[in-house]
Structure formats: C-alpha cells, structure tokens
Image (tube, rainbow, N blue to C red; front, side, top):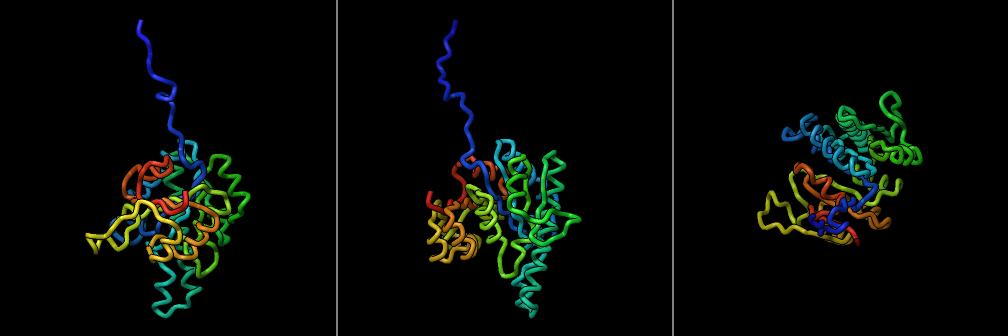
Length: 252
C-alpha cells in the first residue's frame, strides 16, 4: 500500500486575484491588422478569452472604444464641432459592442449590452444598480456609448464604470504592446518597460496609459490597472489570476 504524501495545498485550485473586473478594449483592437472596421477572427479570440475568465467565477464588465471607426479628436482637427464628433465616436463604440455581444452569445454566455445613450432597440439604458444586478446574476455586461457626454474618453468611461460597480481592477488590453514603456517601443528599440507604476508616475511622466482624467479617477478610488498585450491569447486570464503580465499601475 502506498502513501499519498501530497498535502491538501498541492491539490488546491488557484483562485482569481480579482473577483469583479472591468475589461477595457480599445477600438483599434477590433480591427486586427487592417486598422479599420471589425475583424471577426479577432473578436472571436476576445470572446474565447473572456469565456475562459468567466468560467473562473469572475464577474466581468467590458468597456469598448470606437477608434477603429471614428475618434472625436479627429473630427475636431478637421473643423468639425467637437461635441458632434464625440457623439459620433460614442455611436461607433456600439458597433463594436454588438459584435462582441454576438460572439459571446455564440459561445453560450449570457450578456447584457448597456449604453449611456438611449437606443432601446439594441441595448438597455445604463442604470448602475441594474448593471450590478446583471453581474451578480452571472451575466457579462458590455458598456457602450462612452459616458454619454462629449469631451470624455472611453478610458474615463472604464474608470467611472469601475468605480460605480465596485470593480477590483481595470484590465487594459492594448494592441501591439505588452505593457507601459517610457517611449514608443515600436520607434525606440531602447525603450524601457515598467513592471509597476504609481498613478502619479503616469501623470507626471506623461505616459500614454490612459488620459489624466481617467488616471485621477482610478487614483481617487484606489482602482489598480493592469496593462497588457491583448494579442497574446490567455493574457486576460493571467491578469485576473494575478500572474506577472504587462504593467501594473496602482498602489497594491
């Protein structure tokens, strides 16, 4: 008769570091290599990664950008009224949200799309208490149309929604970069990557993680950011599990 010398901890399943998160996906990440529009192969990969995390009993909300179709600042630079241009960008986010919702539901996940601009034919209006209820009921909540107000980025939307729903972290999936650098690594081969940063470092050093409004909102509410490469399959799960991936911004 043999004796099992393994302890109970050897058989313990590692638990996620974060139980409720906001995943921020840039609009550009939806376009894949084309830079414009929606690449469904890319969205399929996103959906599968989200499902992998969801199956670990993590409550997930997703904030989506619209830069693969339109940016408010672009219109302003070309002489368009800034508020009008920003509203166009908000509508662009909903296209991405609907594509992601479709791919998630094909995988058998229950979702709710909530928008800050009323469009009841395709989405629920954003109501904070209802969003939290959906999360508790095991639904993935997708937030579209930004904050519903011009002059605010979808990064600020992610920070605001994270604070409102009590998220423990914001996971920022970037395209083509595996974290935060002191300069653009695509242009500067000697660029230095940061493993961890304080919120004030992001603001004072002018690092392109998220805009100052969003960063300050995260700092005031002690919401850590995990910045990682969205193109690498499994990085969302690694970030949720607390494994070393990308750059952590915060005071953990």
